[in-house]
Length: 178
Image (cartoon, rainbow, N blue to C red; front, top):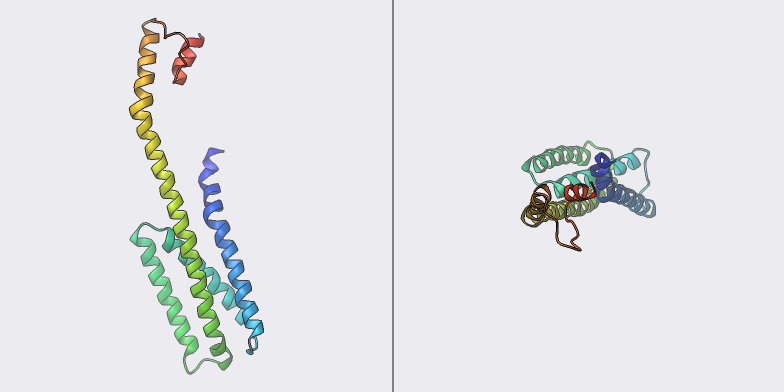
């Protein structure tokens, strides 16, 4: 079960909030589009949904990444998206798509911002866990290891531990029980 801990940790701190942000962003964008004076065409909804997913995922990657690789990936994908938006906003594009583009760009930016917050939070939680682990390892090396070594040394030399002493290490407990 312990092998599933990273997956459960990612679901709790990254995937769940990302999915909630995507759904909320899609609902808000589509509601605003329905309330606006522009008519929603058949291809508009999938574009908004795709941009919400894209923005959130890129934001999570950029926010949670500690390496330049994640940032390079984000830059490349944003270049592709910018090219697509430039094409859709050009003179040859259909007029009904031009009305959608401001909403689509806002959806992308809001989703990216939400993703950055989620990714940054995930990164902070991960760093906090790593610091906790480092502190525990230092405590184990400096405090627990010498105590256990001394206990085991006393027990292996057949010397009694002090009365009312509570053993600090599992190996010593198993020797005492024998």
